[in-house]
Length: 348
Image 1 (cartoon, helix red, strand yellow):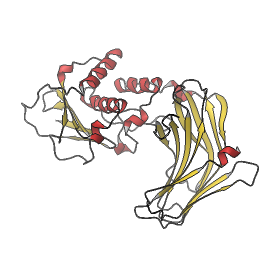
Image 2 (cartoon, rainbow, N blue to C red):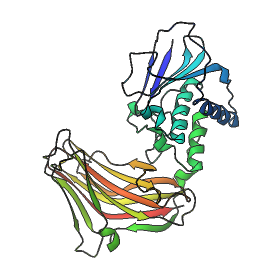
Image 3 (cartoon, rainbow, N blue to C red):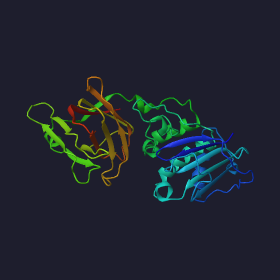
Image 4 (cartoon, rainbow, N blue to C red):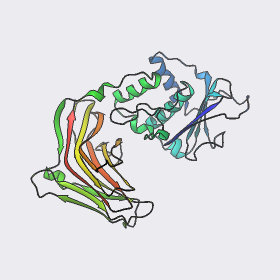
């Protein structure tokens, strides 16, 4: 039995590959060697040891197997290549798969594949309490966002947890998931400066024909009510509208948690979806996304979410300068979402 695994933004596992038995070379591509050595070192720290001579890795122009995987796949990994017990990784040598990835993205990508090749791990669909994947062995096939570097963050406690879990599937949930002591409010909707800072973006409709509308009701003394709506005349595939507000977060303790609460009502959502997002960004590179977490995608039976909770875990005290919150609506029928009582608190 031979098994191959694929990973990019989707991941696929398949078996029964046909190869010749003299194909193993023991070659390790120089650009991939540092990540394999780091993987072996991280395993050694956790009492798991491997021999680098048991694996080969290649940057390839095309996979040695041409059937059974998606056209968007970037990597293949075998833990029993050619029924020899040898391990092999292939990665497409194109920018989207290798050249344009940052070091942390390459590390995460390689560690996922090495989890298949060295640890013989399959994909898992479990999540943490905030719906982040529980493991870097997650799979898009199981409904998770597995562009894995987005869950392999720049705070050491988060990286440590994901590596601990990679080498030991029984690793307990990380401590930062339980930080629930209220510290302070960092965003409250009635503040005038935040009422006026919402921005509207149309995605997927360059001619701006989708007829989305955004409005705020600031007449009351309470929090302003935000409404995002469409008449359903957007293009096919449908465009989407996003409203975004950004605010500062400074002087936080390392690995604090951020929790957003709001009441959300969805109306007319027959074929679309809406999402809630919290993002972390660095002030020096405010356009680069450091962390993104999706929330609601389907409406409840009555279309109302009371005191809806959305979380970001383990903020980096060194790198967290700007946080944004967003609400996204996509629909080809007349629909709207209304948000009020927005509140974002910090917990340690």
